Length: 159
Image (tube, rainbow, N blue to C red):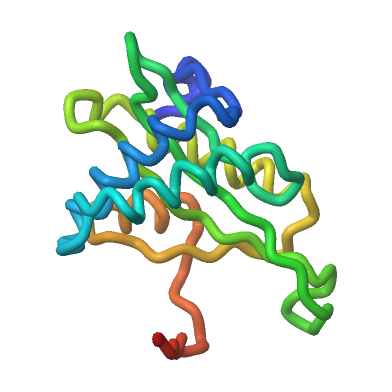
């Protein structure tokens, strides 16, 4: 995709009333990732409440592309603040997630335009870096935008 085409994709910042559409896109994403509980309404209800509340905050932003009657694509970026370090001199990092395009609108550059807007916002907000978890379908987009493998293994404890 050329920069000129990317510039023609109309991206806007999501607002709390977009919460239901953002959750619907998240369901598409969870299905694509093979999440067995993607259609469970309990997490969807909590996610809708979270989007409604958090899209009004200073540290959570989603960028969307509209299509007739729905949000066609989105990218969510969240700032995380911690103690500064050599790799994080400002103490601010960002995490990119919820990058998804509805099946009928794929291949138009919508996700890329949303991601570029999210990265620009994160940079302007003082983030030193942006992390993400990529699906196989999205990995080439992220690598084309400069994302690389990290040197640290992520470990996680669930309960």
